[in-house]
Length: 87
Picture 1 (cartoon, rainbow, N blue to C red):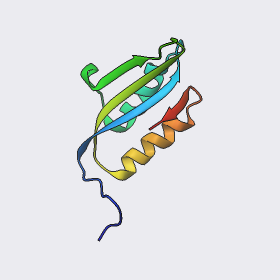
Picture 2 (cartoon, helix red, strand yellow):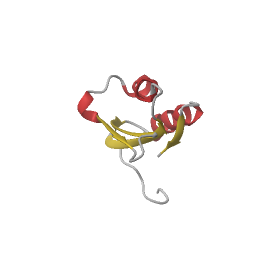
Picture 3 (cartoon, helix red, strand yellow):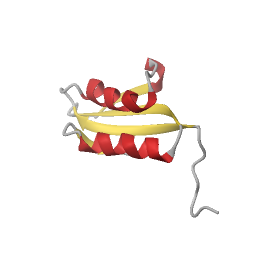
């Protein structure tokens, strides 16, 4: 038996990353995500710039294969100095 809501694997999973505009945020974070998932098609990456243009929000939709894989992605993203937030 599992506690709480169990994530089933494999499944599509959105990883949201926010950081400052102007740095190579997409290249840095996409490299981190792809290190754990393999190459992502452009259609699986959504980019949004904040109203004032200072921040960039990226959503990577990945095929998650395990909780450990997701934990490793989040651990590496949050360790990246360019990333302000990863959800």
